[in-house]
Amino acid sequence: MNHDFESAPEVATAGQLVLMVSADNKRFIIRLTPGAEFHTHKGRMFHDDIIGQPLGRVVVTHRGDRFVALQATLFDLIMSVQRGGTIMYPKDIAYALLKLGAGPGARVIEAGTGSGGLTTALATYVRPTGRVYSYEVRDDMQVRARKNLERIGLDEWVEFRVRDIVDGFEETHVDAVFLDVREPEDYLAQAWAALRWGGTFGSLVPTTNQVSEVLAGMQAAGFMDIEVAEIILRLYKTVPARLRPMDRLTPHTGYLLFGRKAMPLAAVGAAADGEEEPGDGGDEGEAR
Ligand SMILES: C[S@@+](CC[C@H](N)C(=O)[O-])C[C@H]1O[C@@H](n2cnc3c(N)ncnc32)[C@H](O)[C@@H]1O
Image 1 (cartoon, rainbow, N blue to C red):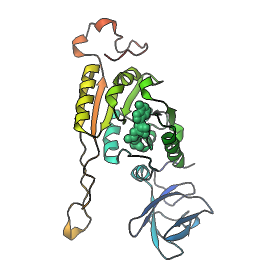
Image 2 (image 1 turned 90 degrees about the horizontal axis):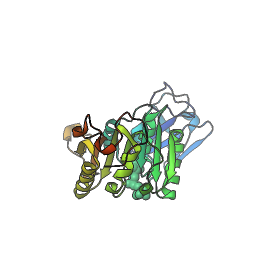
Image 3 (image 1 turned 45 degrees about the vertical axis):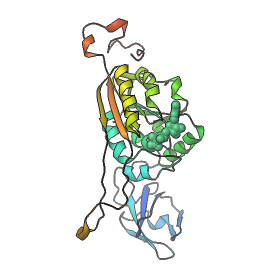
Image 4 (image 1 turned 60 degrees about the horizontal axis):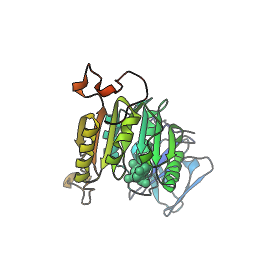
């Protein structure tokens, strides 16, 4: 299965994920399959008319409507997930990936899985040797998310777990934990226990009063290097002569919080109250 959508082959190949864009900007992701047909309300076309042809080429449906076949990017894949609720948006995901250090080999916990928007990005970046542990309390949500990941060939880097995270995480010494759940402040002790020393905690919440609650909880738990951020994205109409913001923008998605699991600076040289110090290598301690 071809899941390497980041490298651009000169011509479209069988198994490749391709974004089909119509003249009126309708967008569909298809996996090119020899002999298969692609149907929309604009008519049908054959995958074989795309396979072996350069990407960026126009393909015409049997009704005469035109589509351009493009390489599907991670942005396209995230926006195409079948949704059962709000997904995390690419602008927030992009910043979170950098803050969480979600690179090749990283072990990252996320909750809840939701529709798998963030999962898609995490799985992309932890490849080939890392792992995403994705927790979700609702079985039906995780079934949908798993299908989304399978559809784009990224499921092999994800361990899906149906569980209420109030019961904690199975993994320890992970590099990062990200919570996109209703009340993240209730699960800070569980996140702390799963993180390695120096690991990064992150969360997304929709309101400022929730920011205050998570922030107070993070400070009480002992997280340091804490940051609160809002990523503001303004899209513009692409009319050179009348360049101005789009009429309907998404005014708000959420606030991001990040922090690192570390010993308090005051405790340097004196392990506080018998707590395991970084590098001791045993089971991780309880939240402070
Ligand atoms: C906003 S959605 C997550 C969206 C996801 N980040 C995405 O990009 O698609 C929140 C999810 O958290 C799940 N959830 C809420 N509380 C939970 C808990 N205590 N344990 C596990 N999952 C939980 C919900 O069922 C829901 O599916």
